Length: 131
Image 1: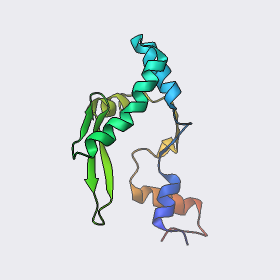
Image 2: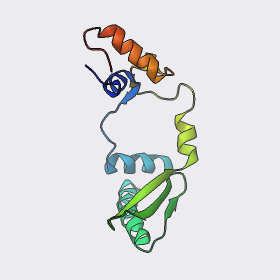
Image 3: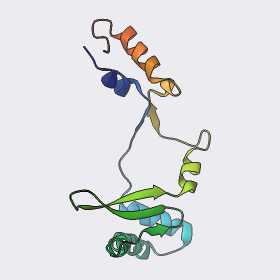
């Protein structure tokens, strides 16, 4: 018997992600939009991580306008980590109607409730219904 989680994970809408943009691609993109040298843009991007570490070690969040805020945190065992809160403009930019040009797997299931996804699973898999 399939579980509800398996059924939902199989049928839920999800993005078919392409390869991650690397630092060279990011630097070229920034250079093309700003007129800055690609090498300088790459150097700045490489140092951004070091800057976040520097300020996080002081217990200070780092805010990058247009990107968001990275805040240090600590768990119960004393291990440090960071959380990121995206700049609202990123979320708004992503949610412009019809602006996404990548592939969406199970696009037809956007807006369906989990119960509907389970019902779809059960109809397609009568010998393996979701619990």
